[in-house]
Amino acid sequence: KKIEHTLFDTVHITMPIASLLNGESDENYTRVKQALLSLQKKIFTYEDEKEWISISIIALPKIKKRSSVVSFQIDSHIWDCCLDFSKGFRKYELATAMKFKSVYSMRFYELLSGQKTKLIYPLEQLKEMFKVQDKYAKTNDFVRKVIEPAKNELDELSPYTFEWSANKEGKKIVSFNFYPIFKPEHRDAELYKKELQKQTGLSWDLGRQVISYLKTSLEFSDKEIKNNRDLFVTAQMELPDIMTELAILRGKSRTKTNPKGWIINALKGKIKDK
Image (cartoon, rainbow, N blue to C red):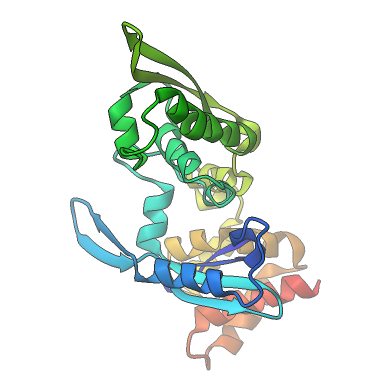
């Protein structure tokens, strides 16, 4: 999987088609196409103190048949919300979420991510949350079909899992306790790296001369530098003289429609050719 920030306030995601199929066959990509179209038609509505906005969950879905790769774009508003909910949700690890086979695992992941204290949910509320109000009349079946499979999958794949216990009134189970457990060995290394970078200034891993040149001569904003931080850091480490390279690229980019985008792609090419 590859996740890239663009200069146009979107995030470009590329992944193998196989990762969407869970080992199943789809020779004509019919199911993948249907899934992408369904996501494209779904609307995400976001509101904070400053604005209200409505956006398609994904845009520009594309299947590269010969390479068996699918790509699509996510608007930065959706991406930022996925990574940093401020109303009770933890940062959402996309790579982890894509591994889940059970929708119940995904829901428990959302409930438990970043939590540190015991959570208590009434049985009926849990059934409503998991859309199984009309199923599993026997509570043991709910535990066997919903709670245990989700726990097993989170134990195996997720940085956030849980232990649980039941609360009874007489012999009847009325609610469940969930005790969050953090498993750092399963966290998304790339996301963790990004979190650490957000806590440091640009000068933590980029030379001051490089930062100054990017801002003053190439007119990159702080946000644009942060979105491409890994690229600039890699270029600084691997290219013999990054300042000279940037100066050369500046001259060549003057005739380009999107100079900064051209510079980004040119740097990627130079690193790839090394």
